[in-house]
Amino acid sequence: MTQAILGLKKSSLAWALVVVLGSGSANAALFGDDEARRAILDLRQRLEQAQVANKALVEQSAQQQNQLLQQIAQQHNQTSAQWRSALLDLQTQIDKLRAELAQSLGAQERLARDLTEVQLRQKDTLTTVDDRLRRFEPIKVTVDGREVLVEPAEKADFDRSMALFRQSDFPGAQAAFSGFLSRYATSVYKHSVLFWLGNAQYANKAYREAMANFQRLLSESPTHPRAPEAMLAIANVQVELKDLKAARKTLEELVKAFPASETAGTARERLSRLR
Image (cartoon, rainbow, N blue to C red):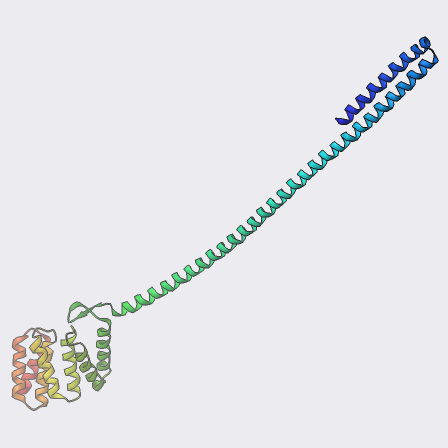
């Protein structure tokens, strides 16, 4: 824009020079050579002055333009520097957030693994506890024709004692049944244990101890399913002790108390042989 203004001024000066020169030629014809010469010199002087002024104006305009360009460049550099600084700060914040996010994700993964391990350990612990509790939970069994609940350990001890008796290990069975009665004084197996203990003692020829346990069974549970057999066993003990009179009496009481039992039939046969 400045160059266009300068070109316009140059054109105006040149046109003025042409006009003046043209008028100078006309005046030279009118006023003579001296006047024409003075007019030309004056015009030349004016032209030189105009050129000097124009040159100064051009230089001033160039300086202003340079200053303006320098200001613009400086502002641009400052703005660029600010933008670069802002971008660097933003990138730093982004990198920091990424690192924090990665750390957070890692922590979450560790927590998830820890939680899974805790849940597995808890499950294993609960399973173990359930297994242990199950060992102590009462179980349903049939004892003397009745369904009852007993402790697992109690049933296991009774089964071990019976296993010894079935294996004809009568000393071992006698010890096992005696120990059972000591540990489980109020057990539902009590009267059955008295019966089998008496039989083990009879097999071991501990006749009086056997008779005492058979009589205890009849005293505490006279209607026990094994009561007829217990009376027959007492009669057998009395025979072994050579007390035949007491044996006959016991057999007669057995037939009278349990006349329809299979054991009563056996008692009748024994009575016929003892008479």
